[in-house]
Length: 204
Image (tube, rainbow, N blue to C red; front, side, top):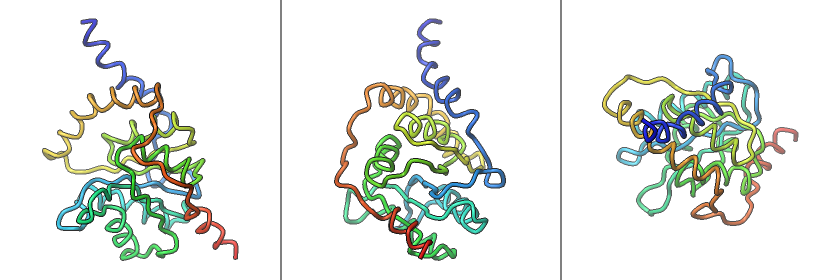
C-alpha cells in the first residue's frame, strides 16, 4: 500500500498544481501567447489529436484571447517536422503566419516549458493539450517559472486516449523529477525574438 501511495504522489502533485488553472476555450483568460504542444504527425500532417489542439488555438485567436501562438514540437529529424506542420495547419485555418512562432526543440513537455521562458521570453501563457496531458503541462510550466492556465481539449475515448491516460501515471513521475532537479533541456540554444517581434508588430 505504501508503494502504491508513493507511485501516485506525482500524479497527485500535477492535479493539485494544475487543478485551479484549468479552463475551456470559452472561459480561458486573455494572454498574449498560447502554447500548443506537439502530438505526432501522420504522413507529414497533424494527427487528429494534434489537430484538436490546433483547433482550440484557432478558436482562442479568433476570439481575441491570444495574440501569438507558439507551436512546440519535435524536429530532430529532417523528415519529421512537427512545428512546421502545426504552422501550416494554423495558417490554413486563418491565423496569420506572422502570429505563429515555432519551437523546433520541444522534445518533451519540460523542454517546451523551459524553452518558452528562457529562449522565447514567455512569462504568461495559455497552454493547449489533451485533457489527459494538460495537468502535467501546467504543473511543469509553473515549475519552470511561467504563469499559465491550461485548456484541455476533449476527444473520443478511443485506444489512444486510454493509452495517454495510463501513460500519464508514469509520466507524472518524470515530471516531478524534472520539477525538483530542473534539468537543462536537451537543446536550449540562444534566445530567439520570434514572440517579442510578433507582439511588437501588433503595436505598429
